Length: 409
Image (cartoon, rainbow, N blue to C red):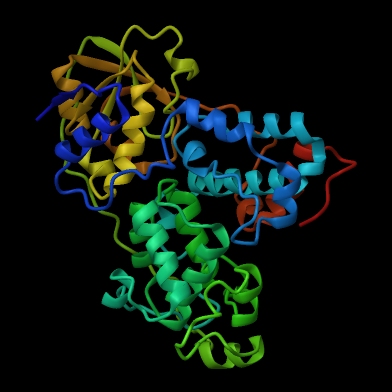
């Protein structure tokens, strides 16, 4: 079934419409301090302090950018963000530019490896768990104030500080022995910046299936970078209160397990319609009214497709609706992508290139022209360059920063 969707200009009315359109989507309404769209993205970008970011980003009250949801959905491009930061701070914002490169790195791995990133990229370096997510974690009732706060941030706001993501991932994987894939899928569905590449590969980095060793932490580390906000009144028996050496012995045994393969959900088959029109298909990575493909487009369409977005939390869908409300030249639909395109008599498609294999499979029988984004560096990357970020950075870093400022990670 193909259903058109007219998005109201009023923000609250728009949130209500999305809630009604997707009654099975769980989660809160989009928080007042988040709004999707290019205007909000540019406003956020203008406030970024690249120097302060480098000094304080690891602290929970540090000068983080909050750009990730906008970059994830293409409200602004990574190149735009890089150019704006360099214009404002030059290479003094080296640490922020370095972190932008990490986002590109994850995407390059996804582009080259495809659905492989949804399974173990490498054999684990330590014994890893296979448990499902425990009920107390899903309810945010672990009894640990720090972890319960991080869960609350995830499900109630859709945004978690990067350091808190690492602490929580380590807790879930190493202390609770949860299967990283179950954790990554849950996280991706909730996060406003939920991105298959950076999410899956970051969880694997913590697990040691895409890294040389597992990531873990202790109470001293958490207390320092959270300014003690969780520890000062905590009465729980702290599982993190030990030296790194003691935690290493307690948590990890050697692993002799091979890399695990996870099944990828297959999409039902459907023939492509023999349509007559060519259109710009807008997908969830290109939500900007100034996207180059829209400049001369006679017809453009976006589709909320259950195969792509059916597992997303309500606030994620509402964030996308905010973005789309600025794109008046795009018609918005709900339904199976192929059914919508059939109803609209579309045969040929132009769209931004995406590593998302689910999207590629939906469009497999259409004549699609995939248009690549402008790269952040003109370098030729091989599979060996993407085994570790350090190898990638050896090629990209000198172009991004200039040879005189480039430093090895």
